[in-house]
Length: 396
Image (cartoon, rainbow, N blue to C red):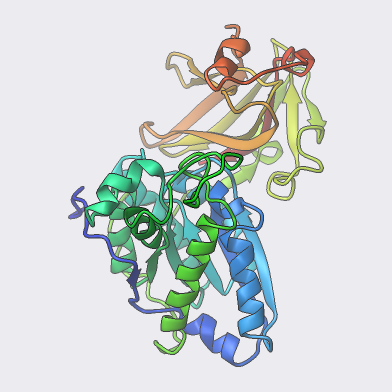
């Protein structure tokens, strides 16, 4: 029975718990190690804390070879993380997994965050109980009021009971940022081109600048990792009983062409993936702009979704599950000035067998109005004239 409540917890920079004993045992022995980074755009950022931390690892432990497993997808949360952790992380046999979803989970229900984060943990340890895990937390401008009062925001307050239950260390990299802002030594956001005597954390209140925000994140990580390196004894982690009975330990992702039946004019395409940062994460994509094309999937469970590509040439899709009324899912938003890996999930289904049919929605998309919400200036509308969908994988 679920006993967790949705109360906010006191903020703390480091909860050391069981540390990272298996990882550091291999590091100290000079054995090769693989470090996975599962998260969103803050983790994805070039020259951000991920790159900076790997550089520090290699200089701090020169006898050890560090292999990176880059599993960060911009604009995605722990729900998609639970679906893709097998292919993007576990299949690459990591020794240590950093999980970063605090900001992207900001507006998810706390119970759902507990279920998805617990699902990620249980999947990792079911595959290899010696893999160490560390929850790492970042911040957005909207989290400042709570953090300045010494309170974790909802997403972190939901993740912490999972970390506590499984004895997983957690690090809030943003508390040091809050301290600098409170002292007047740092601004949460500003314009890089405007002269200022106070450094800025970011230009948007979310994504840190490499030389300020990410630098602080890295400093916190280094400090906390050094505190953990000589603690704990190498051993298999115990999975034990679950906190949430509906945790996402059975979530997954399967290639669309293996699971779906395509009807109409579909083309295997790499025009929206090849050469882009997410190509390795979703290399095989089927696309269509035909109004009469559809794809049907038979599945069992309580949720269904797609890993797909959004961009200038995408439109809305219509999904019909069993005999329910069609659901229109928007696949064009104000950030669709470029193609990117994205996803959606429908999680309110009754247990059992289901059939889902996906096709392009006949309803037109006012792309100009959507882009206007971010004051996007478009000089060439030709890429936006296409109305297509691109499907890569089925989520469950």
